[in-house]
Length: 207
Image 1 (cartoon, rainbow, N blue to C red):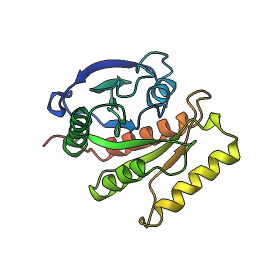
Image 2 (image 1 turned 90 degrees about the horizontal axis):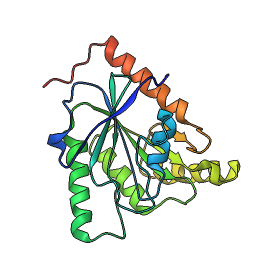
Image 3 (image 1 turned 60 degrees about the vertical axis):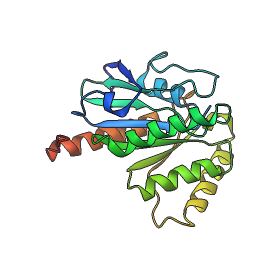
Image 4 (image 1 turned 90 degrees about the vertical axis):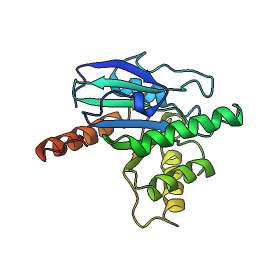
């Protein structure tokens, strides 16, 4: 997929305030410091499209971007911040779950996982929730450039082995590096193929 245009549309504090659900939508989510904004910017060939920050919990709203005038990329607040109050964390979680479960044009949720770490309980729990809730999702391993290639692959295998304890089939998996733009093309190709399928089958998101 060639990115011709990628523009910020709006930030929403409630899922009901999001743009009209009239186009396919692909959302990105992950824990604090997983490299979500950096990966989005690398995919879009845009240095400052999604705002990066070293402060956990900086993304507190649902941020929508219109790509190529025919699909939405959504930057979601992260889950499981340790350094924010329980009240704020609960608000985050409510915003996230309401969006994911109610946004009818959400085609796929990309769950970002830091490839440098062994399987984390909070990631596994979120992935399990997605499966139990019937949410279509993929797993994106980030920061592969921070590791030797064989170590990154071993860590991905560890996640797969952990997930296969409770999953019969695994979702799509991507190993990425925002720094080297690795994996970006594969994700964009998945989005393009999915959009073409929706268009060819005249899929409508109208209620």
